[in-house]
Amino acid sequence: MTAASSLVAVAAISIRHLSTEYTAFQLVFIRSVLGTAMLLPWIIRNARAGRLISTRLPMYCIRTGLSYSGMVCVFYALSVIQIGEVYSLLFIVPLLTVVMAVFFLRETARLYTWLACMMAFAGTLVILRPGSVPFNAAVGAVLYTAFAYAATNICIKSLSRTDDPVQITIYGNFLSLIVAGAGVLLIGDSWEGFSLDDIPWMLGLAVCYLFAGLFHTRSVAAADARVVQPFNFLRLPVGVFLAWWLFNEIPSVWTWVGAFMIFTSSYYVLWREKGLN
Image (tube, rainbow, N blue to C red; front, side):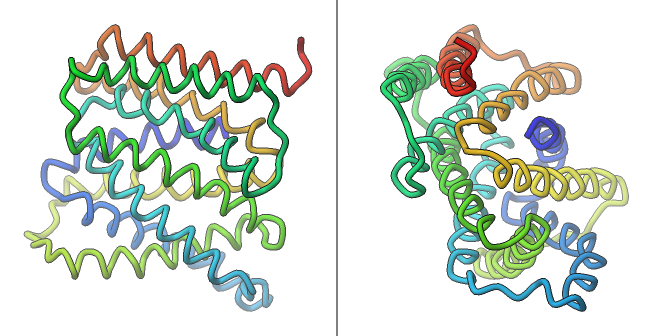
């Protein structure tokens, strides 16, 4: 999860750079095409070995719909608002995942888990500061992404009970390619051609998301959501550092305060679950 979170933060830099020339739908499609192309050796090898057969296609479709819609929304948000603000709001993903795991996967949650969720919600309100900061489409997109990614984590955990991580990654990328292609056609985005200077950024985006997806799937399959999800928080310091270094973006003090509240509440859950008290 540490590697996955770091790679996602690095990918955000590519998204911010490319978003001046490409829409969120186009970037998701580019990422899906390149990701699937890089997976071809695994796809061929697993297909020959008969390891791509799955009886969980409906769950894969649900996961793809959630992942694709969440990705489009977060790509859009990263092109509009600060990277630090985006990842601070996405801090609620681990706690949303824990809550969903309780209801859908029958994992156990104690009183302190629910208290932590309340504190994380308060931290989200600190970042948003209702009444002081306008609630715009980009903020709404990030909050939807948080819900979609948490639900995706539940789908992955469920799929990992029957399918291996590589199989889940292959299905996820292949189905995303189909949905992303349909999305570009339906939205009718106009393509003005690629610049050679954009190719390294596109490859960086695809490589980061491909391996982030694989690492994320392995981590979710290896342990309960409440144990691995807090390591998602690493994407904030990595993302903020890169945004400051490359784009001179510095999050407001309220973003840091809210992020600290969400981080503290989530890490407290991890601390209690690991029995360190």
